[in-house]
Length: 284
Image 1 (cartoon, helix red, strand yellow):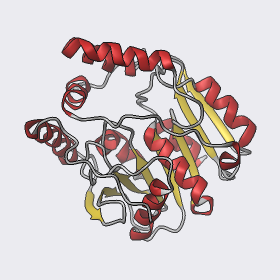
Image 2 (image 1 turned 120 degrees about the horizontal axis):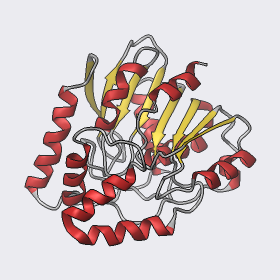
Image 3 (image 1 turned 90 degrees about the vertical axis):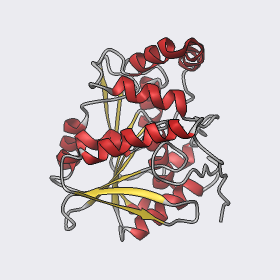
């Protein structure tokens, strides 16, 4: 068992936490289909899950990225739930409703954590859809227990090739310019795609009040990635300021036998309007 690394608070101020949770609760209240929520106990911390869809349908787990929560899947949930029993899971240590624990990235902890979540949900085999750090988490689980993964959808995944240093440098510089810099960060995260209405306000509050986890996601080895014998769908954008999708695709093509790649012109790191492409892949 790997002991979790805990943080006294993930937020700069209590009012900041209240504001972020207020945004989140409002989004949950606007979930487009009937849903239930539950909190699952794991050795690495309590985990908040939003469930929707038919209980008899095959399971699909959605994993959001860093600095966000399961609210990012709200608009997609209706489409996914037509074919799947959907579980949107809040990652540990992020601005959601799961525990503030931040287990070590270079340990089996995140794979163990997701395995425990699946066990609690009585899931033997699952389709995983993850974005950014959520895609890294999905990869970690798929490497750890490949026999439990039906299909794997990776959107702008971390851990395949090193992140773009130029993009990281831009984030650091822009963060020094207060609200104006925050707005520019949000704009660049979406590339040349239009931003969803109101998203700039929500992301600005999170970036201003949430304490992000520092560090770099570990790179998976060739031997680890060769364990991915299930069908894998890689999705990204040409204008991703953090990830070089061409390099990610090139590496995965040499290691994964059943890989499909879609790189969207003009799309940034914060991918939007992808549910149609993902559902076409999953059900095709």
